[in-house]
Amino acid sequence: MKVIINSVHFKTDRKLEDFLTNKVEKLGNKYDDIISSEINLKLGNTDTPMNKITEIRISLKGNDLFASKQNKTFEEAADAALDALKRQLEKHKSRLNH
Image (cartoon, helix red, strand yellow):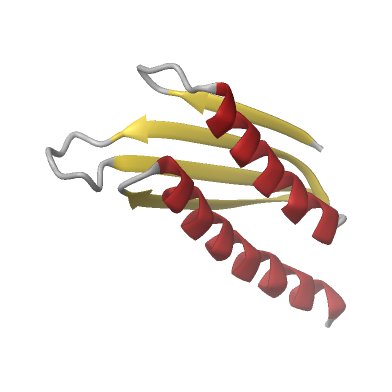
């Protein structure tokens, strides 16, 4: 599966990229329909610590699933977004089976 990581107005470190790639690839191993994923990392315009935004778009055959979460670290935001995507994938899978 192809994983693309984009960061807006800053450079990500290798550790964060490896963390994100590993998490998304685990999801890809569980669901065969996933073709690729794109992860966008942004800093919100707030002064609060909860300004890290992670957006994940997963491309499936004929569909895209998307989740965006905001938290105090990119890792926590990514975990929350991936949890939301897991629920979406389960719904998608159950629709295909009916």
